[in-house]
Each structure stands twice: as structure tokens, then as C-alpha cells.
Length: 330
Image 1 (cartoon, one colour):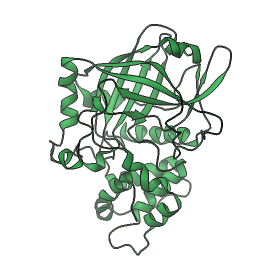
Image 2: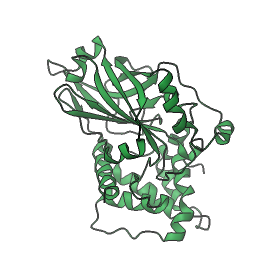
Image 3: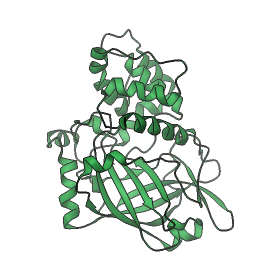
Image 4: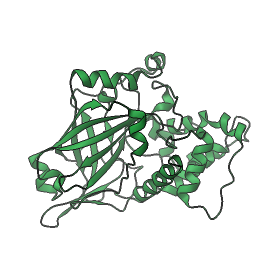
């Protein structure tokens, strides 16, 4: 039975789990706490690092809204001039030394913090997956737990194989994310649905999509594996020093019947997309390792004119990020 690339990434950390001992999840612990507990065991505890997407690089840039965006949302982000943005690109897993070209480093992520004109901030968290392997925070915890119980000597069918049998997206989601030639040449998708609200109160469910203006460029797996372990993180700074990297920021609009509460189900490619604007990434920060310590990106940190949908993963992710931030800040 084939498992997802994300699951493969977690399996890669299983040897560490055997060496350190698997956690006993406290029954009174929250789902978010249990999720981070399993991640910390599978990937190891690394002081000051995120439980997932531990390896990353911070950059700065700006977002310029399109005229179309102001028509479908009253958000201040879309009404005025360009606003500053802090961007963090990252590899998957909680292993801060993972090779950028490893299959387990997929999906690469991009988190953004928009500095709005009124002094508030808005966050967006996207990654290279076309859809997510599970639909809820509890299922994500259970996926990780299943992996932790599925070592090389586990009885067949393993817990992971049983989980995948009842959660088909867990077997296929990871295959939708592959290694790019540059973090600036990857398409990043919003797997969660949000709601655009216009000045008349009209509500439109949508999903974010960030498409590189230069086009996506994916490396063959064998070539990616041969690259320097830090080739993506090391490449982005010099690239931006030569010229900015630009992304088209799109909203894929849902139609009647499209699920907004299940991140495992992508909407058809035929759905209309609206240009929300352009993200321009101009430079890597001088001390990325220090800068990222203070950064917390919350997918429910929005602004008037953009709202959360009924997707349960949004709140689940926010809670898990908060637990991870609290632990790495101690």
C-alpha cells in the first residue's frame, strides 16, 4: 500500500522515535498538544525550532493589490497602495538539517505576514500541496500517531496502512508536491477555504494560490537529491539581490456544491480565478535564523473583508502553531 510523501517524511523520523521512546499522550491534553508531542518525537526536539517546517529562510517584500480584488472584498489589503510583507519559505518536517532536495522536504511552505495600512497584520499560510492528506486536526494527529506505530517490525497491516485505507487523500496528497529549482519557482496553494466579503456583504468562498511569474520549475527527483543540502535556502538570497521574485496572488472561487470544510478535496481546475494582486519578494533578511524566532504565522489572523470558512483545519492549525511557538520560545 502506498503512503503519502508526508507520511514517508514522518516515517524517516521513526528511528529517532524508537531511540527516544514514543510519547504517552495525556488524555487531558488538547489535540494540538498531542499533535506537537508526536511531531517532537518523530522529528526530535530542536531548541528554538518549529515542530514542523523547522528549516526556513525569511525574506521581505510587498503586496500590490489588483483593481479586481477591491470589487470582491472590502479588505483594506485590497483598497490602497502596496503594503509591506514578511515572508518565510520553508522545508517540510521538524528536522532543521533536512536536505532541501530530499523528497521528505516536500511540501515546501510559504508563510506571509501582511503589514496593513491601519497598523494591523494579516497572515496567510500556504504550501506546495494541491490538497491536504486529512480533513481535521484530529485526523492529522491520528495520522502522525499511526506513523509512530508503524515501524519496520510492526505487524501487517500496520497502523499507517489501516489509516490510509480509510483516508485515501493521505495516500495521494504528498505526490502533488515536488522539489523546485528555487523557492521562487514553486507554486504555493491554500488548501483551506476562506471567505471574501465585499462592501455589500456578498460572501464568496475561495482558496489562495501563489503562482511564480517566472513559472514553476520542478527538478527531477534524482537531480534534486544530488543538490547541495542547503541549495534552496542558499539560492534565494543571491537571487533576490539580483532581481525581485514575483508571484501572482490568485483567489480560486468556489461554486455551489464545492466543499469548503474538507481540505482533502480540491476544487476543479475549471473554477474561476481572480487576480488579487502581486507579491514582490525583494530581499532575504540579514539574520534569518534570528528573525524567524519571533515570527508566528496564524491562518486565522485575518482582516475585515476576509473571514474563515467552516474548514475545521484552520482552527486546528492555529492551535498547533500556538503550542509549537510556546514551546520553542521557552
